[in-house]
Image (cartoon, rainbow over all chains, first blue to last red; front, side, top):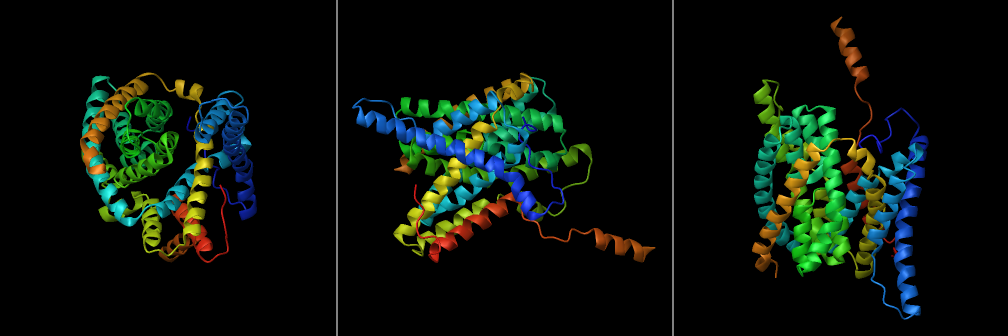
Length: 360
Length: 46
């Protein structure tokens, strides 16, 4: 999976040639994303003009489905992969821009609540995943990667932890494949369960932000429920992302001591290196919006820019998910991940229901 | 010898300032916000 959509090798190319490398994939992302938006609008128009009731399927789902079909039938040709891999960039830019839709006070209130829930979720998930990995006889470092991936932040956390604990490439690709496959499944299951339980937008958004691993899948699962739920899901996930540095630092120190290798050096510098900088960008935009620097029209434009960035992200989620590649990675890491995810989904659901009165 | 080593290490130092993916995303998003604020981008439709 990891090699199916890899970032372009950093060759000493001219700026225009480097940009040209990304162009085909960017066009594909835009085409898939826009096709999703076009389908949603066309179906709604058809239903209105023919006076028939058709359930509204959001552009988010269409974009992901079209991407999945391409990725799992023809595959993504090599020329398109560097551009498709930029979906992470659009995700982070979209989250920063989404900050304009939050008042800083709400961020601090909801973010503070999220941080408390995140701390509980991370502690219990790490313990549970570690015990599960041992019970299934997984390699200790693979268990660490799966624990970090499922408790904090999916692929980014696994990549950060891989370097810090000096794990094998094979272990990290197992963990990434398992987390991606489970994220893709959760993306479809969470909205169904949320509707079935009649959850409010806020409660559902918090649950998706705490329970789903990858930020892209969290954003999509939130958007599949409602616009308001997507906002809360991204905020909760951002609070979770902010913890990457601390957990990875803990594991780096643990493995350095266990293997008698060199430690991490300056801990503050290590934390800063691992800290996701887009969290700061999100807070800056939120603070600027709270200070009424932007007019109402400008805020609408910023929100729309964020939606366009997410549209490219959703297309990328579908295009980078290849089930055949994931199957090759083996069943045991997937099984451990799946059991862990189910437990984390229940745990976070309990936490959200417990915190529900603080959300009102 | 030491001088040559120092010279070599200076030559092999990365000369360009590189931004991470995160930092690029923040820079682009803040740049676009600035363009909207100063009115260069009038309206973004959806």
